[in-house]
Length: 138
Image (cartoon, rainbow, N blue to C red):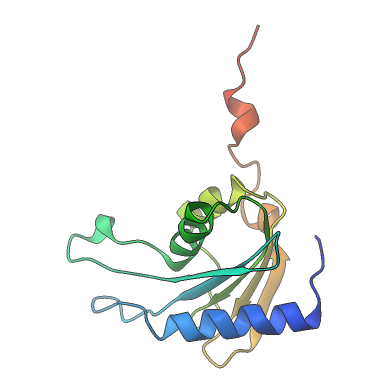
């Protein structure tokens, strides 16, 4: 797992905490903020946005990743996720993030900013389905 500097980790945490306050979670009341450190040193942050039609909502991690991609970024260096209890990304988000960096360092913090988990994405999503799985077989 690639290491980031303590300063980068602090910036990621703060960005995730800041955006967590913007989460729209009137149903679950589970506010999540995510911030991705990108290859150029910038940070893309997103929060969860729920919807009365539950499947229509989006998780913070996929919101942040979509913002990154929409701004032309494809190199994901690390992600910080802040949840009330230090939860890790859901399965759908793990798969989504794996597209860009299967070894992405995941920093999961609780709402007080205390690190609960630090591990590579591929430890959270073993044997991920990726681009190589779509290569044609002769």
